[in-house]
Amino acid sequence: MKNMLNALLVALALGGGLAAAHAQAPAAPAAAPAPAQPEGGIRSQNIFDVKPDASQDPGFLDQTNGERQRVMPGNNSPMWRQVSGGVTGFSSLPFEEAPEAGNLIQRFVKYPGSLYTNAGEAWRQTRNNVIIPYGAALLFVTLLALAIYYFTRGPIRLHERETGRKIERFTPFERATHWSNAIAFVVLAVSGLVMAFGKFFLLPVIGGALFGWLTYVLKTVHNFVGPLFVVTTAFMIVTFIRDNLPRKSDLEWMRHGGGLFGGKEPRSHRFNAGEKLVFWGGVLLLGAFVIASGLFLNKLLPGFVYTRGQMQIAHMIHATATLLMIALIMGHIYIGTLGMPGAYKAMREGYVDETWAKEHHRLWYDDIEAGKIPAQRSAEARSAHAPVAGVRVEGSPS
Image (tube, rainbow, N blue to C red; front, side, top):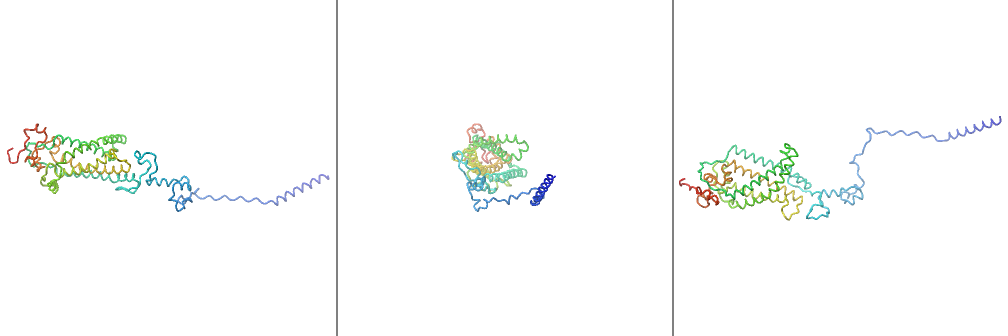
């Protein structure tokens, strides 16, 4: 009995101690409420509002690439700023073989019709915004003007009947020189026009694959025929320069516009002022620019390193001079074929009728009539046309 009472007292004592300990323990903190989520999910910061500490440096934009690497590792903008500005770096390749090896992007320039930008882009803008559209307009207007003149005025015909007596206008050598130069020019003009304008009118018709092969072939032909044109042009100048020297009568011919717009055709020597304009302005002046720039583009001129900038300028000169030359020669071709009957036959066979010479080149005919110029100049012509070698003197029996 006594033992049972002691055990009950011990149990009550332990229970009271645990209750007191529990009463003295601090209460557990309440759980914090979950933060409210912003509407629309995660929101990012505006990148234009983020600036690295290094960019606050007053000399930040003037730092070299090495300085930039210390404050912003991996940022190579100073180097690329120099590259895009045309700064030439170091290259171990020899300058004679690779003059632009250390230059990735050309310097900034401004060509006619372009913005102030790197030279490659400026050349592209000049070609696409000036040379191509205005060149096409020039050729179209020239062709349209010739067509309008032909259908409104018609060809320049003879006023008198032909006599049947022939005068040798061009020797076999002169004709060979002219035709070789003319054929080379036509091949170069056609191939060049296809390469320049073909993507606008041929590419949509024949497709990219065929157009690619066509332009490749024409480019190859263009490069090989070019030197032939150089040689034949030199022969043209030497062969015809004497009869193309300016004379006083040329001013009268020009003053009357060659008789193209009514009235009698002014008197002229073997070549009139219009033909001399084609010779001096087209064959000699524009031909010199076309030939020099073409040889440069083919890297056939010695003493040059042929940089991209030089090639771009040479291309612009070549394209501009060629388009002007084509427009001028189009007028020459018109007069020599549809515009003046008998002119094409003269270059094909070498002879013109006495009436043709008298009406179109009266001063030249007068010199032949006076014996200053032989009617038949080549030995082949004198032997083959001996019965008709003489020219009727005006007022003498036919």
